[in-house]
Amino acid sequence: MTTARPRAGQIQTVLGAIAADDIGVTLPHEHLFIDFTVMYAQPVAASDHGRGSEPVSPANLGWVRQHFNANLDNLRLTDERVARDEILLFKNAGGRTVIDPTPRSLARDPLALARLARATGLNVVMGAGYYVAASHPPDMDRRTVDDLVREIVADVTGGVGETGVRAGLIGEIGCSWPWTDNEKKVVRAGVLAQRETGAPLMIHPGRDRRAPMEIAEFVQKEGGDLRRTIMCHICRTIADVRAVLALARTGIWLEYDLFGLESSYYPYNPSFDMPNDGTRMAHVLALIEAGHGPQVLVSHDIAYKSALVTYGGYGYHHLLVNVVPRLRAKGVDDAGLRRLLVENPARAFAFG
Ligand SMILES: [Zn+2]
Image (cartoon, rainbow, N blue to C red):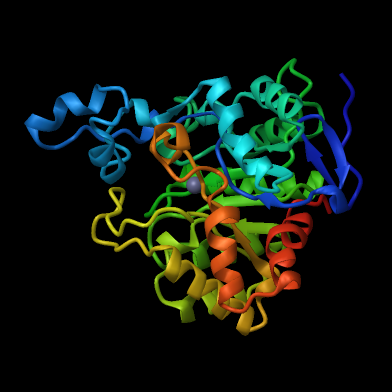
């Protein structure tokens, strides 16, 4: 197996490096294959227990949408044919590239991603590293930072195991709130691996409005490059747009990656009202207005069957089909849309 890293300005897909200029319309955060059952929460009410293990179907879809982490089947995206049909909707709507930041601890599947890229003609970019502590392997306490760096660098430069499929980004690295020592160790390893490989770094923050800034300061202190670091899930973490603007001033990428979630109930944090697409667009417009448009990324973070068209959801094409016309109506012109959907991802995912 050869060991190589892409040249600066290239993007590393599961089928090899491409020029950043060839990225086209890009979804910067979607899960094509994932086993997310580590996030399963058994329904509280005894009369709902059975629903936790039912297959997702029209009979329970209303309940599953509301309690999307309380049904095991909903947390598994493992069917290749479904994945292909679903992502082709994005391609048919004008899409070209999908970033799948599923880390190894959520059943990342390099060979399936490569097959999907060949079958669809889409560019697919794969992640590396570890999600939140709840998903860490049992020996994580004993793993050293060096160990983790070596593993991440190997995924990026040599490919995962014997698959020959290389990761094109480091992440999504998972952080909880409060932030655990092992999670901090993985972020530190991610920063060092970024310095060694030039790969982009993507971080999933804990569910507290203070988490993104705390992590950004940590990454900077460790010598990371915030201009090549992506902070995920801004909309479920920070409600106050002024706090988002303060974060933007650090230079970090701000990812509004839960487009399509229109319900205010957020089962992972019921005390937080999840915003809808209207509020997400308002934040994006405020960032553009303040001059931070070149730091914004938009996606759906689909990781649940209930989000797929096959199961009555909005699908990977939702942004292009439903949100782009609304942004246009709100005054974002062709150049602004191109920046949001093409130019920003091209810069965010290019190797340094
Ligand atoms: Zn995430």
